[in-house]
Amino acid sequence: MGMGRSQTIYYTADMVRALNAAVPEHTWRRYETVHGELLVTRSAPRPYHQRIVARLVVRIANYLQGEPVGEVYSSPSEISWGLDDVLVQPDVFVIPTDVARTLGADSPWDVVRHLLLVAEVLSPSTKRFDRFPKRRLYQERTVPLYWIIDVDERSVDVWTPGDTFPRVERERLTWHPEGAREPLVIELAELFAEP
Image (tube, rainbow, N blue to C red; front, side, top):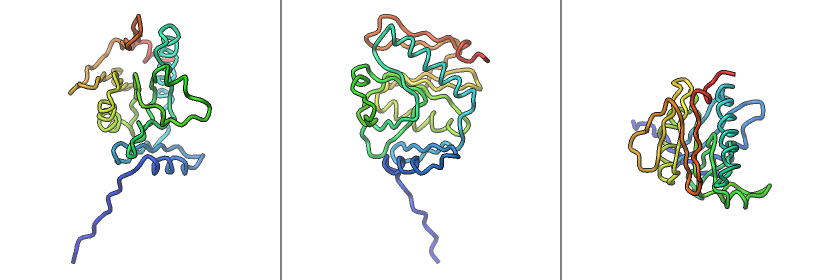
């Protein structure tokens, strides 16, 4: 008697788009894929998670007004770099100004092929994805700086494309993108402050 075989499914960006489109409005679920691996966020972000995302967006947007090297966005989004087996939705990301200027109201995310900064805020259902397959993807795609924000530990893992291990920050984050005169400095005590 033969053993049953389970079918391995390699997910495409189009398959993930269809899954996300089919999610009922009264539920919260998000699908992503990295090199065919399906990543499922099973629950809505906690309010504290959303507060951190909002604070990051505001701080980065304010910085970019004085240093106009890019434009900041938050998900939902569909970043795929034009790859058939990739579709991710970073919590916060910055794209170059010249690309941002080409985005119209109906522009597809496919035109975004270069990210200057990515930040993911960990949640219980995304910790493994953010630290492993998504981090490796961002390194492969040469995202210059990737922040993995751990609100429970009040720390941030800082990654660059060539890193084997992260630099763990507990005091402040610094981002000095190419073309900017001054760096962005975010004090973690302010980022993690209770309301």
